[in-house]
Length: 102
Image (cartoon, rainbow, N blue to C red; front, side, top):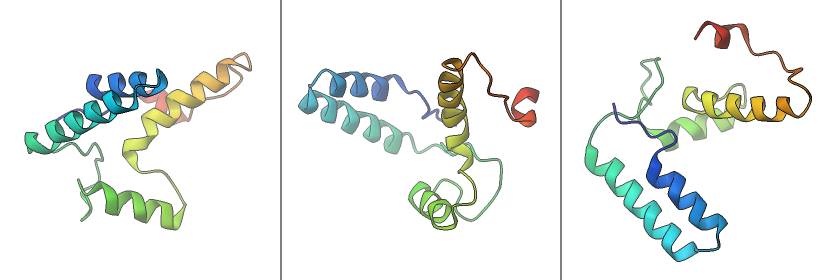
């Protein structure tokens, strides 16, 4: 499985965007997406064998449509950001019990 999360090319692209280098950032994003597409490997981290496995647009659209929970692939990123926000309040945030098991 190819790892998409925190991919160095996309991290670099975001840094370029923040520096005002939009043209270079867009080129880097195109390179990142091309590499992901060319790899031909599964990049879906969801453990559920649903019919939308690896079909990100459809999966995210469905999750947005029902609004009940996040797609599995978003959870680590959101939890990391919540942790950063929690640090601002002296870590009074309590992680979900399942997250503590990992």
